[in-house]
Length: 335
Image: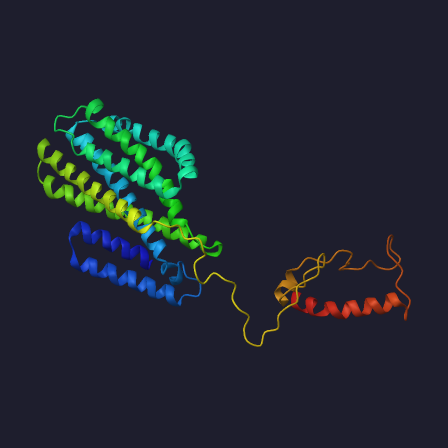
């Protein structure tokens, strides 16, 4: 609740230009971090957030998804309000972009990443995406879909299809196995937050020029400004990748080693090869399945298949009595 409300307040602060909402957003996010500091089972451990690589890589994730989500919204408005397309024609006009993204991410990105590594592939994808946005900024007021809009859409599809798998790999790099869930959740949050923040920023930039005007020229200029800001997002992601994501972390992050035993605790000896591991607690003993050849409810003497009881004083009788005494704690725990 704290992190969702904090991010939502931040988006509202951008859209409404509200200083109060911005201050509330900062307070809620700070309260979330404080909560994670003292929570027994935090959503994201602060020691994970102390990794510079994680924060820098997810900053690039945020910028990339801010570009993608904001571009889709503004371009849909551009096609409908400037080019005059209806909803169905707008969807068909967008179709080449997801087709290219799917083909590239399935067939090109994995091979390129395996050969060159995620960082060079990400740099190439961001460069292609930036080129597509710059081409989109050159679209005139009287737009031809085939010659003016389709080439930038295809180029942007190529860039996004290559960049997104690479940036996700970089964001997860160096995470210890015990923390992969937290790191993945943090990256997913960066994607959602980037989409919301990017959409709000680009919408505000476009609205400052197009608000209250139905002229095609004003609408065109406002959306073009939004595309230019999106190009700035990609440029920032390029700089982050080129300057700060140079060497992949090779060692697990600190704090992932098994915890040391408490003072005074007795270490349990390792079981021999092939030996059954004894239950560590009474609860485990209660939930443990019965050992092979152990009869929980012995058959009544005289029934078919019932074995005769061992004679008192025999070796079998003595071993059975000792085994019954050893099983009493487990039976009491089960009750």
